[in-house]
Image 1 (cartoon, rainbow, N blue to C red):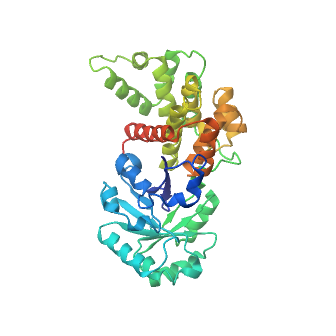
Image 2: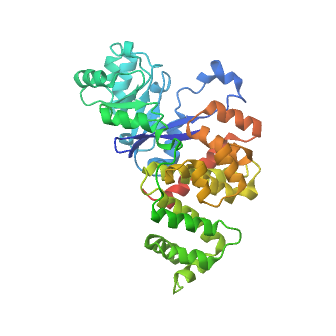
Image 3: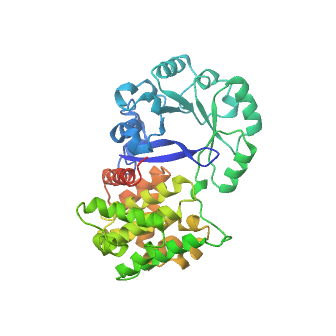
Length: 407
């Protein structure tokens, strides 16, 4: 099993829901699946298995999840496969489902069961053919490149009042900003929120400079605990967070100073906590999805270390994941951002040049995030990795994030 989440944003760049995409079979190991065998078990929805196993609290922070269904799985006993409340699930239809009476009737049944419906990949020329199915939907996903949103807003407003328009394939921040300014769309899906910074235009704020100083202290070889404690003392939020974590670890210990708290945590754990806590603070003025992205990347990379035969470098891979969007956090190019922090050569090569073994894991994670199952499957074959171990690693990262930052 492979599974990932793709966020849908509103005009404030807040995540409103997630699309779940899954794959149960590695096509490179099962070439017959690309022929008729792909219809075996077509009545099951692997995304529902993921949702049911994880629950929406862990999977999406309680937000509704879009689950794709096709011309076969629409007739499955979806209520038996799904153990979460139906109002949290949006069944996402596509053009594999023909606008015929049997499918319209089934869509009505699913809506009566409490599921909300959405539809995607419908060409403009087929809107009228699909009018009965579209009328049942709460959302329609549109390729903003192919659609004139001003006309679409008028058309859908008249024909299907209440339906929400979702722009997909929004790949740049400029596209997102323009679409928001023009109005018309309710939700936006795409990679725009994590695109690399191409030009350094802003100075780093003094508060972020303090955080970078702290990162450099703890990422130096054999760093001094007291130096780290002194920098932590400059920021009340970090002080409170440190005391909270130490108090959870040692109930009966009376903490007398920040240096004492740092010593209680120990050098290794303090370094890990600081890298995580500071990354959260560096993302404080960014979309909340960015902190979720880098945290899950970090833990996913750490969990994958043994699969890529790099178990001894798991802590360093964790830091690579945290810093994989450092350019966005600091609003500088990655080259300029990495000039400000102390990281290993392995991490620099991966983030700047896409070279080395670390880059291989980061590229794998990015393909996984995009649900590029063909490329993911290819890498799994080349590296002789069991796809179920990857799925376990990803779910472990989701659970870790849930416990780290409760919804």
